Image (cartoon, rainbow, N blue to C red):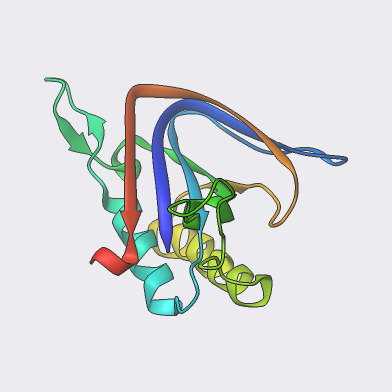
Length: 150
């Protein structure tokens, strides 16, 4: 799994023909891609890692607080383009991105783990839909995490 994690002061996602499906205040906007071969352990590890990331500032401005420490929320947006390979030609290949039947259950496991194991509020977009995401990047703080690198 590949995650692009952005610390935000607010974020919202709107799904074409549906409207707003998620909105958060202070927390993290997580763009998440399931890669071919990912398993449940990857979803669990990544959810735990993101829940415990100390990327929120304390009183001295140091990164010492996690989502739980600040009562932060997560806006989860599935994004298969994180698996893009643009090394050859000008049109990226997305062959590494998992098919929906493999990806959706792992996305659900990831969000469920954040909710159930860590007590974090998670708002979401819709898998495979055309979405518009608005966010106020705080810092800016942006991290890329990949379960293949652990």
